[in-house]
Length: 136
Image (tube, rainbow, N blue to C red):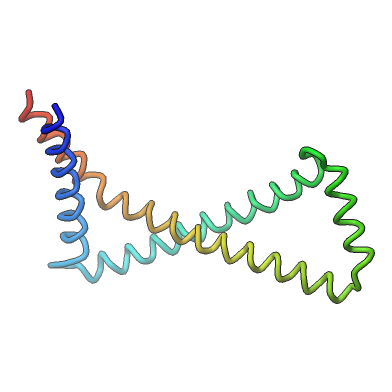
């Protein structure tokens, strides 16, 4: 049974590599690459926006109704009162930009993975079906 599992994994890996190679090389590859990059950009924008919206609401929700929310609200309030306005703005902007940059990176990663999965999935399913039909 272990040999068949290893053989199936090898067939799936080979099918995915072949699908990627066939998609990005050969006849009409330039058009497929441009469409792939466009789709990745669109998907990444969607994922980034979703992460920014969910992340900001998670922070707000954590401050308002999370565990020990009164302590955190008191800390944020005392920080804002004790710190000069220009430093509060600079520190808040830095915190927001660093969080947004993380969301952009994760959005790019998720968009690329999602669109690469659409390229590889048909070939992987065919390889699994061929492997299962040879076992039967």
